[in-house]
Length: 300
Length: 202
Image (cartoon, rainbow over all chains, first blue to last red; front, side):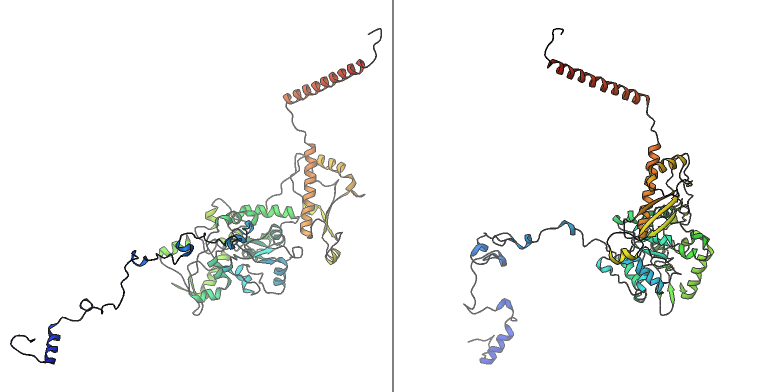
């Protein structure tokens, strides 16, 4: 008869007593009914065991399969289209959407471009007639020679590429042309300055041109922004001789001279605004950094 | 720290008007890569017009004074529809050759001799070009032609200084060539004589 000590317990009392005495139920003291599940006897290799990822029968299991891409004899997909050297590096090549001299003259004649101020990429984008997409490898505008013979505008223009005859046409009319490089973040700021200012980021400093462009932008023949201005003066004279015109003396017009000679620093993006400045359009304020380290960074 | 918008514009204009002439673009922001740091010895002036190189000592400098020549634009020939019919793209450059003092005298004389078929009755030398579709490019081509012509004439006038050894060597080679030629001639003569029938005298 079950019982603790001298007491004799009835049915429910015995059950309750058991509950009191036995340990707490846990995974370590319960067990399934026999034959509730089957134990896997072979396989090994833990969870990579049994078929070892090779499937059932066939070449897969028998390690007799063909190489990746093979199409059982017919010309495989990866060999169908031949490699063409002409497109090598096409995704890296810089693009410069064209603007013809004829278009430029039309803009000047219709008053869409102000010739009393220097014309740069921002001025051209502000006409809303030209789109620039830095995300599609476009790095600025190039001037083409369509309308070369009839170009008569006197301008100070800054583009990213201009051929020799276009440079001659602009300088013949007493203008000044410079070729300058802008990196993608600078371009995004330049093409829509209002949107950039509204974003609340300080003006970045313009990066130097990549290695394969340095030669172009330091050459006075291309009127590069990094070229020596004295050598540029010499090239202006030489080009005047080549294309058969008398080189106009820029100093003859003292009122226009400062505008004609106005150029940006190689690290500058906007005329009159320094890198590092934060423009607040709403309150009409400009904030500039005072910290020496920041100033040093933006100046370097 | 905050600089008001309107104040700032005034400062910039002040900066630009205060500096003189050609160095105006150096006012404003200057980084460590500004032009005066890249080229410390340069005058940084794109407005200077260098003096035209003179054609002296009988040598042509290559400079063509544009005020001493006349440029004419006329319509080109050939096919081309409306463009060739309406646009004057053919370029003519003419000048009075005898009175062109920008070409040194000896070169002028030799040039007149060489191009005598292209000089008009009044003595004007005419160079033309209708190579491209653009007036300006054709003008450049015309001037290029003219310059090359004058240079080639100048080159032909230059007598190269030959050293004594070269002259001596040339003389020796000429004499040797003459000797060889006579030797071959004699040998050929003997061959021909040998084909004659013999006579009592020989």
